[in-house]
Image (cartoon, rainbow, N blue to C red; front, side, top):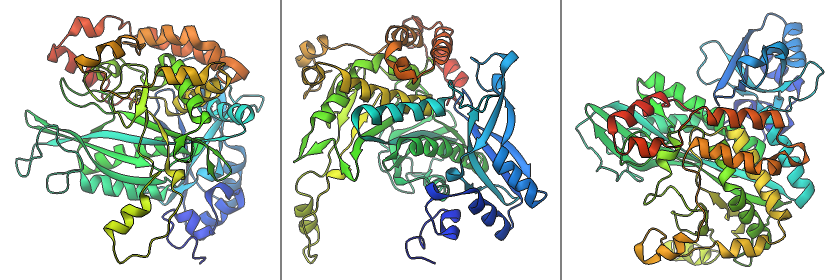
Length: 501
């Protein structure tokens, strides 16, 4: 076996000794036949963001070839509310690069993510996955750069209260066992996610930690590495499926819900982004943000109100987006400041070699360029997001930033370097625009800015119509004010949207 693949956790990559992006139909067939695989599972997301499944028991080599070549028919109207039942037949075709060994199936199985096609054999224009592909293609045409993305997947594990070694309330950040009870589930999930091709940066326990009645709530996070935006979306949706399935096997509950009780930290889905040209990270040069980065930031800020339509999709999203917590409400950006909408985190742009030499006096350290680590973070999305549409929307926002005539000035005017929630800085906060406060408001913002998303044919008008109608249907314009701090009524909504996304 080539040393390049010897430690790769992805079983097909290791066996075939090639990167997943290079998988062919013959590769899949060879892996299946030589590893006694008995089942093929097609996977594809519906409008609710969850992976759907179509199972095939393999009965011959010809049958396997037919499955992988022709795909199968599905009812699109049952998957997407904006597709009419009278014209709902769709094809699902496997994308070979996404094939992985199912970590749960007792019957040896290979799972493959699929794309949707119409009766004419054309990609479904309203498909979230195809919308994302279009967004990337247009971004590359306009900027000459590729877009890379990674997500911070936050979630709560809910289990019976254990009085031994309880972590302090809202102080669970990076706790170790025995104060962090969710470590084993998180570690196994990371192993399984890596086995499907997920590029994981790290996992840890998060701030959120509390008990309520006889239940214990522990927040955890798995963070990914930046990769091509299409692959990043696939990895996130597979990771959510793995975490939920493992939780069921562990006998605990698990939620990505943006808010699960009053006065406690909610869960976000922060998205880190960067622009690449070849191997070069184009968001930073000589330790400073480039004009390209500032244009991208301007695009994020300008389209932020409507980006919530993809990243904050149920009423509980807006119980998380409230002042005086780490979730943003003001449309601004800054360095390291966690109260801003767009954050530029530490990027190892200076002193990396000095730190390593100081920590390891015996180590011979050469200066290296760590600029590739620098990202720009978009902080308002949460676990209710349609991952494909969210990442597509962010790509549109970057392209929009490059097309804005005053993008650099726009970005500079919305930079903040203070805590905008301090009374002393009230004047700064007052001059900033606000994110929507409800799904209904988000729908109105998307109506106002829809042309930017529909430009170049990226977002299909029918898709945008469907999203607007779905958000308005929540009728939650005054919900936060009406409920106030009525915990009982808020908890009713928490339970209603507990398994979102």
